Image (cartoon, rainbow, N blue to C red; front, side, top):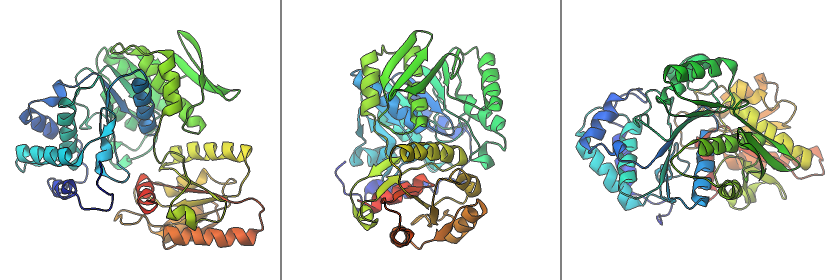
Length: 442
């Protein structure tokens, strides 16, 4: 897509209209999307083989690994993911390229016309548009990421995928999915299909028991992390093991121990499905070529980087719940062990997130946190509100009026600290904030 990020797009106006079709922000159900798909000729029944991915954390990265490995095998791959960071087009990848603006606008108008004003959520109608796009472009595979939950998610209309995947389950979106890890796991396990292998990442015991019980009822074979497969880092390499033996692999291009887990889940899924053969070489190449923005992404240029203290490292990560924060903190600790630098956080979060639990992961690691409101987001926590949560978590904290103000404050504090090394700055707390950073940074 060649349209500049700051320009007006026809699809933006259509997407704005679609948000008004249903009075609730989220209303989990399959009836509305199934009705629309039928009006569109049931595109969900004409898709290439699907790997369906649910979970609380890591599902986007796992999808990125799956795509990279399949493409390294020479396969043409469609991908559906959410949310987007800068433009909606990121959600629909057709054979390796983001959907074209003209095609997206036409598809959305077609779905809007067929829906004829009937109640439907934004995610449901845009999922229907994506499935229509996937049928109109030839591909060998479709990587389908769940939007929210699983059981009643709009993506859960695939009768028999090639495989299902459940990445780690933790507390998030409790108002929609349940107040306990077990209840949330039950919603995620809703993607399990009778007789279809389900690959399961590391889980709390409560979540694993729920997933195992659902799989048993559905007679679905399970591949569980720590039992049927596992992986670890050894001598700066990744060692993967399953029932077929050991694989000595390069470390994933995406940094952090949690990405070794996500890569292993993707490898296990590809080695257990029957739709496409996968070679060891394709797995290796996929690990080295994978890309996934805002997952411990190093920013090296742009106005925000220029505003940071001289010589500073600036990193961006979209982790937005306590489980994600712990994975991020572990990855930063690994960076610190290799190259010590004073750590400063810049954090913005949505109102629905557990800020206190998030910040606790960084106690003893971060020098301080500078809190910001997410630019242009009505659901953001205020900088003062986040400041209170950071202090309650035992962190030194300061509110800032903007990202630029946050970086200027860090420059001043770091200069006063007298620390010889340039700082390491991690902007985190929300994918919405990550998107704002990528927009502002060009």
